[in-house]
Length: 346
Ligand SMILES: NC(=O)c1ccc[n+]([C@@H]2O[C@H](COP(=O)([O-])OP(=O)(O)OC[C@H]3O[C@@H](n4cnc5c(N)ncnc54)[C@H](O)[C@@H]3O)[C@@H](O)[C@H]2O)c1
Image 1 (tube, rainbow, N blue to C red):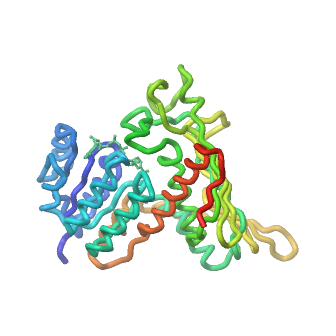
Image 2 (image 1 turned 30 degrees about the vertical axis):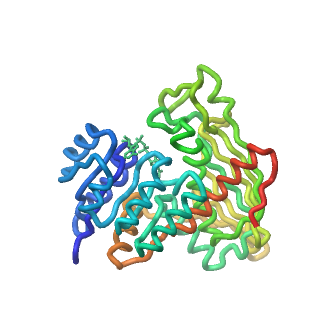
Image 3 (image 1 turned 135 degrees about the vertical axis):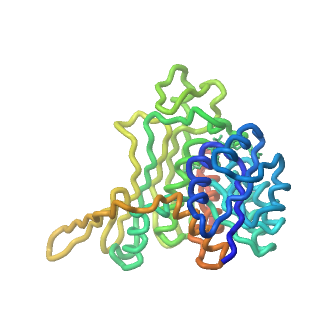
């Protein structure tokens, strides 16, 4: 089998910690060929660290020596680079969120279709063992028709103090576009991509705009901070479903927690940790799962699904149309908060 020649664009934190190690491990199917970053010193040192032969200053040069790329730049550049790569005949795995706006996401999908190339987005929570179990349990009818979903992606004091995460021009938003998007994506996938009807959202920045904040993830400048650190939302869907949504980087709560709970007609579930809630034999009935301890990491499984799909051996798990729906909802939450009104989507 021919190996897939992979390139990496933007080699900061997530590229070094998740993408490059995952592709480097797939020695039978992947040749990690080239990297590109506007910070050429960083690119040179990452190339040395991971033994990658080519370093480029411009992404157009990298397209000439690879079959596929993973894009790990700040959000502002996702769409521009993805469209250029797809137009050059290169398959694309792009970090989340897919892009800053729905319009950008649509341009990416159009480029993928026009050039008959694959496009996927790094929503890696789908590859957690709990998420896979939840998907299977719902498919097998364990909870019946879903009714009410609660999503909480909560961090008490974790504003990222590195990179450009608190810069709206480069990222498009804060806690929602960075962290909330993962759980929103996972919830929509588990619910089988229901069509949203109406969105009400509210964003906050008061804590992070106040000087002298306690923060577990480094130091940030409260004066230049111009994104959200806490977001709430309420979303209704075409089939009668509703979702209560909340995420934060900074909130006065007891502790960090990730909650995805779905209450259905015949049962309910928590995804983290995975449990089923039903009624049986005239009583309430709870089932817990004991997960295997030797699971492959979600980052590796994500890379493997992308590579196998590019080689024609598998199908993408995260489809671009699904990632677009996440961006559409986030955009509606931001718009609802900015205009103090509910946003109709259907
Ligand atoms: N899936 C996840 O859980 C997860 C976690 C962290 C970050 N991310 C996403 O990954 C992306 C990068 O985040 P990070 O934490 O690695 O940030 P980072 O700041 O550590 O790294 C970004 C890198 O991109 C480079 N860069 C900036 N503009 C560029 C351009 N136009 N062309 C080429 N390179 C450019 C920077 O020099 C830097 O090396 C963001 O989209 C972020 O949302 C995802």
